[in-house]
Every structure is written in structure tokens, then in C-alpha cells.
Length: 186
Image (cartoon, rainbow, N blue to C red; front, side, top):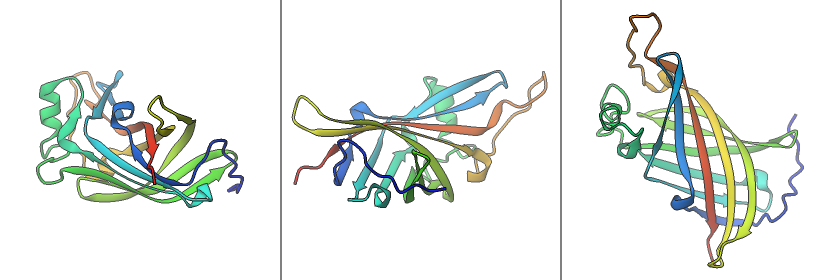
């Protein structure tokens, strides 16, 4: 059931620009079937347009594939190749929202995610952190968004069998966004 309750303390309609120094585009994937490896994209951009009715708000975002960082240079280089993201051919990952829902008090953002030239619908669980003014007078919003995708759906199919059985990489990738954005001044 979709609720229409949209009273959010501190909410303001307008266009918001991501603050990259206080935000992160991260991901994690099962590795060796025993643990998770995390990474992030160092270069990204996003614009949020909050409508009078929060459920009519939109977001568009992009991450630069070549900026991938898993704290291991050789792995990062491999991730940029055609085995994975093919950064030379597909230099960005893009997301464009298609709707916002409030389900039992939880916000969900539906949209189209494009990775390696393949576009699939995804839904991000969206948790507001709140609103406030920074020391420079900028009105800021904070939030966390999370989704899980199957990497093969986007053509990311590389894997290797392990001597002990199983595969090197898991199929599911969790994408976690830590976001802070500033309301554009009129």
C-alpha cells in the first residue's frame, strides 16, 4: 500500500546539488564466498529536484567509472576493463528516477540504472537524515539510499572458479549512497 503522508520537518522544494566532499557512492560484493569487498566511485554528480509534494520529486545522478577505488590498484585496473565495466566504452554509470513512493512511512525511489550500456529498473530504499544549515549558510539535506542489483543483469559476468569450490565473486552487489546536498540559492 502506498501512503500519501508527506509531512517532512525542514523540507523545502527546490533544486539541490550534491556535495561530493560529504557524500559517497559505494558498493560491496561477496568475495571468495567468505567476506565482502567494498569500493566506491571517487567522481560523481547528482541533482535532486524536490517538488511541493515530495512524492513528485526527481533525481538524476552519474558516477565516473574510471574513478572506481577498492583500495587495490590492480583490482581497480581490472574492474575498468571489458571483463567488468569497460570504462573506455562506457565511461559512466547513470541513474534517473521514475518515481518516489512512501510505503508505510518508508520512502522508496524507483528509477532506471544504466551500467555498461544496459538499463534496468531499480528501487532504492531512501532514509532521510534530516535538514540543516551549515556554517556557511547553505541549507543542506542528508540521506542514505541503498539497493541491491544482480551484476549479470548489467553484463558484469566475469567470475572464476575456486579450488575449494564456489566462485570468486558473488552475484549480488549492494549499492549504498551516503548523500548530502545543498539547496541551490535563487
